[in-house]
Structures are given as structure tokens and as C-alpha cells.
Length: 227
Image (cartoon, rainbow, N blue to C red; front, side, top):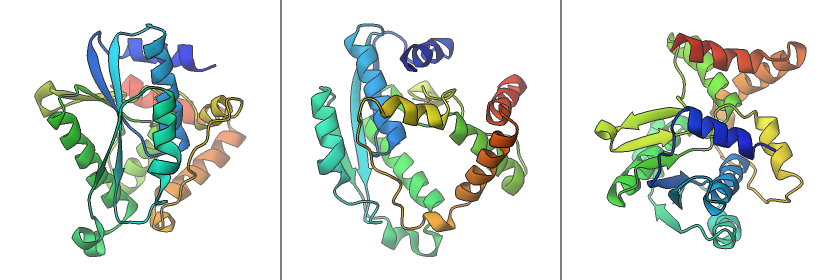
């Protein structure tokens, strides 16, 4: 059960102060669907005092068209979480720059704009500990710096804060949490994923973690201690 641990992380990093308006970025993948259920549970139990809504960003890059109507909308309706969708074309704008990184960057900008326009003060993302550790290694190897995705990050002069409540949850724990609940989710279907450098880094880290258990957690903790 990871709900109590996620609650502890939220409190440790002061992610959701009382009265917060939280916008969840929901793609339909396992991480965002898992976080949707966890945050809805914390809201419904009155454990935390906050308002929760979700947003799906859709583009013309053909990343599993129809996932909004088929999966995300029914899930949000069942949990009484208000849901919105925004669409923007990316193919013509990207040109030769089109990649998973460019698409993610543009999607993030769309989430920021919607959150600002609708006066949300928190933007929740479903990144888990594996994502964060992989980003450390990617930035170290390919960009020559030691940095990654923070559990919390204030933006726009503090008007919006990005939060990652799954920051210390392992990816396998997300799968294990969802399995007995029978929660449907969309497997990764990005048509450009083969060009993404995260895939090889993920596979390398998984193999290393199998040989030396705790490596992923150590990478995360090393960055935490550095801060």
C-alpha cells in the first residue's frame, strides 16, 4: 500500500498546503492513473484539504488517439474529478526538432498555461523515483550537469508549484499497486519513442538495480543530499 507513503512525501515536501487547487496532468499511462486514484482517495478521506482537477493534453502526434474518451474520461467520472482536455498541433511547429523531448516540453507549456488561466496553484505530475534517477544519469552523461526533476518546483514567481507526489515510489510499486485494483491504463505508444535516449538509460539502470539492489534509490538520495 503506497497511499500512506505518498501522503508522507506530500507532507515532507509541503506539496499540498491546505486550500490548494491541484491540477493533475493525466496522460492515461500507469503513473498518472495511479496518482489520480491516490490523490482522489486522499481528497475523499479528508486527509488533505485541497481541490482536485485533471487535464489531458492531446496533439496530432498520434500518441494513442481516443485514450481520452476510452480511458481517462470514465476514470475521472468514476472518481468525481473534474476533467478538461486541450488540443494543439505539434507536427508542423516541430519540423526536424520533433522528438519525445520536444513534445514533452510543448505539452508541459500547455499544462502551465491552463493552470495559470484557471488559477490552479499546484500542478501534479506522475514522475516516480525511477524517472528521477534516470534523469540524473541522462543529464550527467549527455549534458554534463548534475540535476533532475525536483519533488517540488516553484514557477512564475511562486504562482504555480510543480509537485511530484510519487517522487520516492519505485515504478514496480506503481504496477503492484494498480494490479489488484484492476485499473486500466495506456501502455506507452509514442511513435517516436525509439529515438528517445531515456529508453536505453532505463534498461541499463534496471539491469544495474537487479545486480546491485538499491542503486536507483541511492541515485535519488545522492541528489537529495546534494541539495
